Image 1: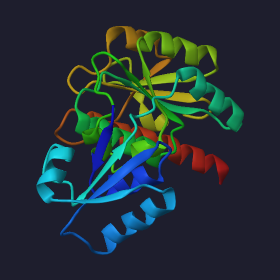
Image 2: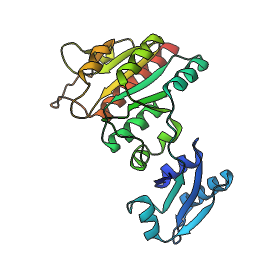
Image 3: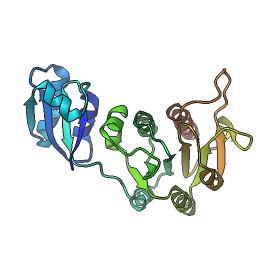
Image 4: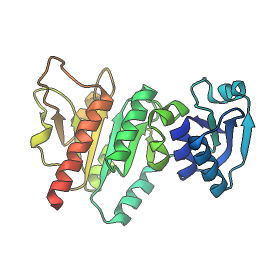
Length: 248
């Protein structure tokens, strides 16, 4: 099975990423510096380049908003949770993972993955059921960040949380309510995994029970909550802020 990713930035990151790029398709009437950059990257990796009519690119991408560039690739390589833990242990660094409990919208998932990569997360865990997998829409929404990020797809999130806890991780779920403590006064040092719930229902009951603590983002304005992508960005970069402050 072949994946097709599209758009200048996702294709660029695909050509720079870890999975095998197969062919680069460009608009036969296109060109310019951004396309030229893709051609240089393709040559460096030995990826064949094919010129195609725009209608053919529309068909490969599944829609017309591809900016004249489509890249065929091997299927997305999910990382086993055991491999993710082994890589973290070998790094000698504090662990920093993001767990997603039922994100179903591909645009939200892509935005969250972009946030995770920018914040230096060592890996993201998604579920096989009640969740969106990695698709070309997710890749584009992440601006290609997913090509550089270890993503695990697990059958049982509860067992994964328990495995991380046994490995020395503190698990904090993003939630609102009486049991949640404010994000900005909580120490987020050491081995840490944040859990973000689904767009509509938030964290499932079992997930909330397993978390070592629940965190809420203080809301001062008129809205009661942020969407999953925005909430993940706030929480992820609070971890970054605290870790940089501890190094100063």
